[in-house]
Amino acid sequence: MKNKKLLVAFLLYLLIVPFSFAQNTNDEKEFIKQNKEMKKQEAELKRQALAMKEVHEALAEQAVDMRMMPGRPPMPAPPDPNVYKNLTLQKMFRNESLVKEVTFDVNNDFSEYRDTNPNDRFILNLKGSCSSGAIKITIYGPSGKVFKELTIDPSANVSWSQYVMFTVEKKYQGTWKTKIEAENARGFYDLSFSIVYAPF
Image (cartoon, rainbow, N blue to C red; front, side):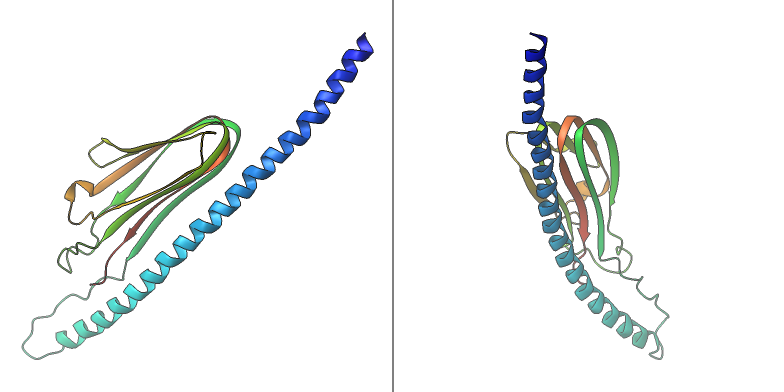
């Protein structure tokens, strides 16, 4: 009888271990795939930032020429371009639980040097997948109110993106807070915040 119990336990072990290994492999493959997509988006944002930088440098040269004109008072040169700001958070969970909070400042860094540009954007992106447990992401606006709440769980993969024109809607300027809560989670999340300033 004892030998039979040991045999049953051994057979169950042989069934469970490969399944667990396959599940981990699938989670990691999904994480790599989502990470590649996020890097493509970041590359596109950086390309836009480079184009804006070139515009900024041309305008800076023009400003220098204008300061050298007779009879004109000296003017400050625009600051170095800060046309692209980004914060990316990524984590793979293996049956883990945690609570973490992060902040991100949204403001018009060029307000002293130009008029408000309505095309300045604050972009939020979230991707994630979870085979068991749950990962909850809560994003709070500068007012402290919940802007978005999303839960990543086994019911479906999550892919969410949204942007706001923060120079037009002043309520979006200030410090944003994000709370990340994982409970016995097996999966991952990829969260990014980006500011893209339109050309001067």
